[in-house]
Image (tube, rainbow, N blue to C red; front, side):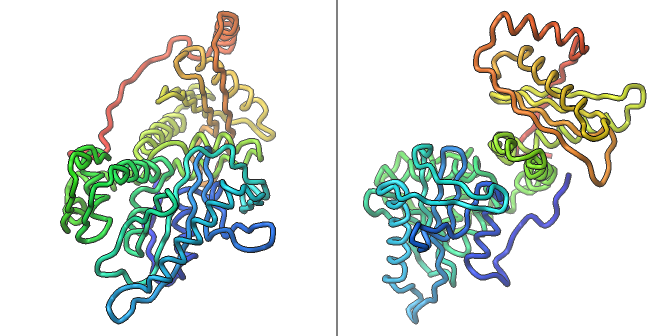
Length: 395
């Protein structure tokens, strides 16, 4: 479950390649579209991330500093104009745009599904001594990432939920029109955000903010931060499970999207629970099946470990019954996600996935669920175990 070397560095890569690789690591291949084109063949933007109701438009430029240590204003302005043009094409003029990536193939961009849009101008080159971390133009907020910061933020907030959470909170802070001075770059603002429970609540009370250099270094030196990084290693096993969701076919994109909805901390909990259950299944010799159910935030996860030869129809049916029973046992969660694999831990294994969504649970469904539960002997006497996990372990 552990994934080594998950921190990406810029060295040896050109600007677009570097950001593309970082984005695919953080947002996964399914929702990253590199260099999408307009109908006339012109490039819309350098990178478009579309996940659920969220769109992130990236424009990436490699710039050189002038002798005074600053970028040419026209080069910075051009990047801003290009990103505003892409946003206008997608949501203003609504030009039909075809999207394509290696996982999903070709599809049409649907602007009506998007309710949140973020614009990011990434300037890859030597960082300026003092630079803006945001621009406002045509009523839009454009996040300006430097080479230094894009490496930090996409390695630190490497899930859709974590990354968007920061952008959303940052924009809420900026909408107050308070003056913000960052000494040391945006990483200092990110450090404040992480050190204060991912919130700028206290900063919103001030009209003029000065965030001094040193917060980022202070964060990295904290024992709790180092313990978090160590504890998060197992969470990348969940990323691998998300990538495996597509072995079942195109219809599994919805499953992958649900699995990817989680934060890095939530993935740590889920991955640890799945791995511990798999170890128990591996060591079970008295029965040929092992189940684990985990009610989570709005979703109930079902893990099934069972050896069934191809085409695995028995295992799929068992997973379906298990998810149906779980929906009735935890009625507050309208969504159930099921994952099935072999009993034995091995270098390679197969997976089956299932997404069950029943918005309204009726007495008729409850009766049917109880019949399935009794007949298949699924969670007749479930044993509950409460666990506690700190995002920043103190030990």
